[in-house]
Image (cartoon, rainbow over all chains, first blue to last red; front, side):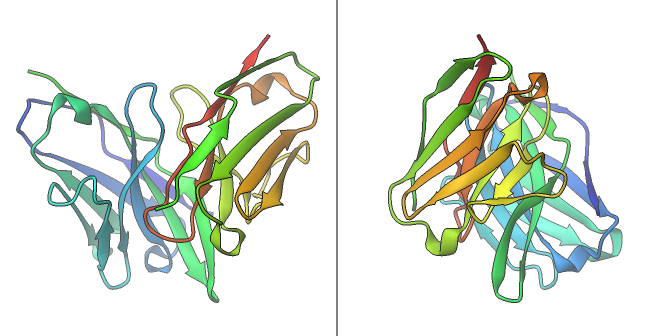
Length: 122
Length: 108
């Protein structure tokens, strides 16, 4: 069925960068795209961007353009999300989630990581 | 970019009652790519419904989805104690894969 396991909580100072990992297991890594979604305390889910794990192509939300980089290591079945220029508003839980396109049909986020809390504070 | 607006923000009901949650899109949702997720405190979201009305694996049949175009509904026929949570709709056709603001179903 599959599982996504994320790295642990982070505390960062304003202006710093954070890198969160998401390790996939139990399925063929390159069969699914991986997305990053964040959720500030008490707020809605916010899509950040995705990576096609097969060829490494990425697409980012305009809200994060220039600050977020998503990468992957296929040998480790792991995807990374790097967010720079951190500010207090970036304090949130960050989730990875997978989806796929199969035979021309788009499927939704069926498996999610457990979430990584990133706190930005001076 | 499609904007999804859910209503109501909070639904106060008792176990055994029927819950009806609404999701309205700012433009027509392509090819019925509308999903619903359930999120409990401190947990990741869980996929409930996709393609407007298809239940994800393991989802009880008291959950059902309906709608088309710009108006969609998630119905929980009889609320169980474990159903009290926040529910989000999502348009997942294309980037950005936007979510609604959520509806909290709380115990009355």
